[in-house]
Every structure is written in C-alpha cells, then in structure tokens.
Image 1 (cartoon, rainbow, N blue to C red):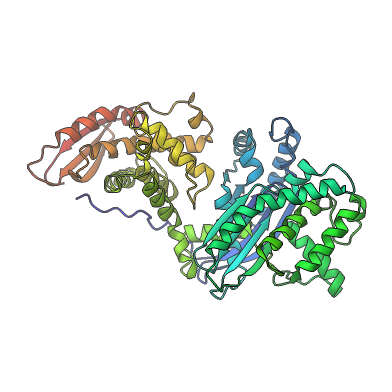
Image 2: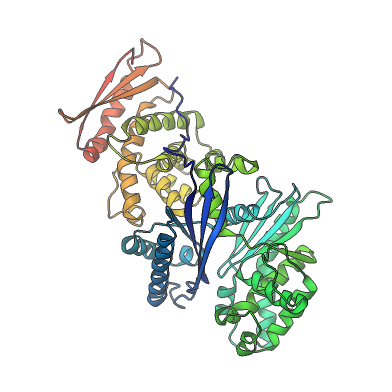
Length: 542
C-alpha cells in the first residue's frame, strides 16, 4: 500500500511569542476591523483596537445588482486606512473576508481582484454557511455556553444568520437573504413608513424566516430551552438605546446585557411612527444606522416571535472575532473544546465525497500520492505551504465526484459540484481553487480564456497552474484503481533539467504497465509548467 502521508502538517513555524493580528469583515453595511494580540501559550487573544466605517457595499446598482464604482472606491480607501492602522500597531498579518454584498454582486470578484492589485490584500469571499460558522466561533470566544443550547442571530446588512450550538459542534447553520440594508432599499420608500409598506415588510420577513426557524426547531431536543443570543450593529444599537433609557447608562462591555421582546416591540413601534430625522435624534443613533434600523429591528422582532423566545442576550463578538479564532485553529493554537473545528475542512470534504458517491479508497490513494509529490517538491519546484497543501488534498479527494453526473466531461462536472457543494471551513476562493484543481486533473491545462480560471486572483491562478500537474500524476499512479504503487521518490537533476520519479510497486512481479503509460500520457502538463523533462522509473527498492 502507498505510504501514509498526513493530511495536515504542523505549520512551518507555530508562533510561541505574542503576535498581533488584524481581521477585517467587509459587510453589506459597514467595514469593521479588529486588531488583537494573540498569546499562543494560553492560548487566547486580547482586543487592542477596533475600527469601523459605514461604506454601504449593499447600495448596488438597481438594475444590474453590481457594486457601484464610487462605493468600491470608498471601500478601497477604507481598506487602505485599515492597513495603515494595522501597520502602525505592528500587525503581523491582515486577514479579510467579504460577505453577502460582494458574494452576490456580478462584479464582486472583479472588485476583489482590484483590491488585491491595488493594496496587495487578498480578501476571502465566504459563503453564508461559512459566515455563520465563523460567527459561532466569535460568539464562543466571548461567552460561556456551559454545554447548554444557544440560538445565535446575527442581523447584517444583506443577510441574517441563525446558528444553533451548545459550545461544541454547531447543530445548525443557516443564512437567509434578509438584512437591514437589503430590505430598506427594496421595501421602504416612505418616511415615516406607511402602514401598507410596514405590513408588507413584516409579512416578507416572516415568510423568509419561517423555513430556517422551523428547521432549527426540529433539531432541538424535547424539553430543551435554548438561550437566545444576538450580535451585530442592529442588535447592539437596539440594546444601547434600551439600556440608556432603562438604566441611564450603557453597560461596558455590552456582552451579557438583556432586553425583552416586549421592549423590542415597543421600540419597533416607535421607529415606524417617526421620520428618519426623528430617529436620528435618538441618543446613540448614527446617521447611517437611522436609515436602516427599522428593517433590522423588525427582523429581530419576527425571529423572536417565531422562535417563541421572550429575552435576548447581547454578545459584542461576532464574525471578525470568529476570523481570529479560525486563524488560531488553523495554526494549531487551540487545544480546548473547540479543537474539533480544526478538522472541519476534512469532515466537510469527506461529507461531500459521500454525497456524490466518490470511490473513497481510490481518492485517498490519489491524495496520498499528490501530497507526497507536494512535500518532495516543496522548496524545489514550488513554495506553497500547508494551506495550499490542504486544498490539493481536498481536490484529490473530490476530483472524480463529477462521475456522479456523467463520466463524459466529468472533470467539468466535478468543478460545478465542488463549486456549489457548501464546503465548510473554506473561503469562496479556497473552494474555487479546489474546484479548479479538480477541473484540470485531466484534459486541457488551465487557460486564461477559461472563465473558471480567469476569475481567480493571480496568486491563486499560480496555485492551480503549479499544483494541477501534481494531481494529474497522482491520478495516473492509480490508473487501475488497485493501489499498485506503494511509494514514490522524487529526484531533481537541475544540470540535466530533469525530474525523476522512482516508483515502487506493491508487488515485485507487477510491471505497472498501465500506470506507466498513464503517467507518460499525463506528464506534458508537468513538463510545460516546470520546464523539466520528467523521467519515470519502476524500482523494487525505493
């Protein structure tokens, strides 16, 4: 059998001293940045700075749904300022994610490419479910769950996330396309809002929330009474208004403050009866929040009503803190109850493989060959690290999933299934890389004219270009689907411009003719990318 190759290697250098990390959340309404000091030995992080700018990415072109040029420019200016702040505070790394506004805009990926080119900042586009997962991580970092069920709601500008969890693996993750900016733009045309508009808005919100809430309810065990937790600008604004009026002060921190559904209903009724200027006059209300607060508060009211909960507890940690926790998990810094999350990518990938009836034994052999090639060529033919290695593993596991649709052009079907498979733990760009690697495991090499390849930022096009030949060779090594190759050893001969693959068969009397033929057929991609002649030998003692 092929030598076992670990999926996840320990990072090249796990930091043992404190590090400064910046996380940016590009939301539909605002851009947020949190800068933290990570203490690896504990492990924990301390927030040392927060930045926010209301950019309103969700204010899209009405007819096309595209991001507006002036809004994109405003976002770039804000991101540049965030970078400067992070640099001033000696941040070692800036991590950024984009959510629903960029995810849904037809020109969203072009915008991210523009950001990468102008600022050298690579922004991860994440799915709604992945956004919910990281929100869960963020809330867990700021609240003690005591192994009790919690329902978390995060009301953003473009979407609302609902999560059910008890401090361990999330039981339910959902994202619904209703948000304060989206609904205000689509449904609120009068000021104050008319009775007819309000009734329609309320009915629409209820209709959109009914299905995810019904599904969430079915997951709760009989007799379980979950705690309801809210996070986001809308909920924090509501909490601050109610706290100032009831307590005469705003609690610091806001996490842990509670308010009732009755108080929320009273506030929604106040919001609906007054104009924008009158809402703006409420202490603690910003000008941009006053525009959208009614729709956001109404989402919360309807969610609480459908769930049958009477009280909400505020948490001031959310997606951006979740980005930090996810980074710590990825880099092996968390060994506590969240440790299960470090395998989320592997479990999610295998779940998709099972869904599409992948021959897992074959795929795992291909993955082992691919990772062996990756490890032996690292620092010689390529400089990619553990993150790219994981993407190659996922692509190897899923490269044949397109056979579920049809064997003909199955590499193209694999791209589509992976692209739309809701892989958790990965950004949208990660998923795009995995899908492209699978797409190019056979047939043509990556070409700029291919839309699926062209939409990737240059760095990730390079990943696909350089790693897809390794996947092709790995697939060829299991041509008969029997694991005929026990191991592979690589030798680089720079003077001769050659690269040698020494293959050891499982059985000494096996000439592996079909595998050798397949490798010979697949090697032109490797030779073209690396400008080396590939020499393959079969040896009985590698």
